[in-house]
Length: 336
Image (cartoon, rainbow, N blue to C red; front, side):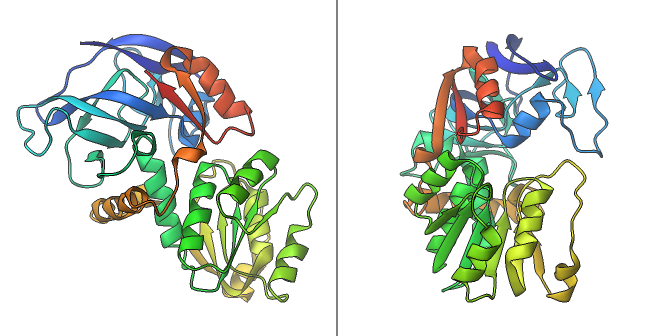
């Protein structure tokens, strides 16, 4: 069948093309409900790749996520409309979420049926399709909050409150944090964080974040800090406001070299944690996906209010421009 797919032909050239699509014997064909633009999608659309990846330019139907032209998308939900002959645990009509790079910015996408945390996952009963369309990034952020080490009564600072930071802030509050402090340079995101339950919001462009955190913690520093901004300035700030023996959670995917003063990491015995669910060993992922998604279905974490923009699939180039350049954009979605 034919389907429209968002393609980055080369860096900073996002278009919508028509391509053929056919599910294999172990795959399902999904009619997309909504697809989301992730930070990874933004990086790839601008030509930003990890240094270990050799970017290639190839012709033909290439779907590798390190080569151009690049078919876009890995965050989406939809309805199964066809199943491969070997598929037994999914049927036509099932609502599913994508967990993997399956070119989901499209009218339809094909994904495998696997059991290692990649492929499609059924949408839990009670979850909105809007939230389901953000299943993968939501699972990652909830996992980060749950694994951050926060304990009852802690002061937690979340540095960077885009989509992931907003979710993490909600989770650590539910986990027992007595005080959640959100830090960002965009006032719109800080206002949203306050609406979603943050106790204190700080903008380092006008607030002395270090002094305020020390004031709120009897000069001890935060019990847990979580870096979600994706730059060395944020990591340094986390290092400066963490207490002796505190926990630093690293969530962001930082692609540029970072220059940091990390003497306190040693002298103050910091517990440094990486918080990436989709890069855990594969046997862990299915359990964590189910657990995190059930928390959304149960209403423990609010996702729908974090969708800031919805564009028609045909307007993908405009959607990427907003996602990459509008600081107030939280989650930008594409609707076929």
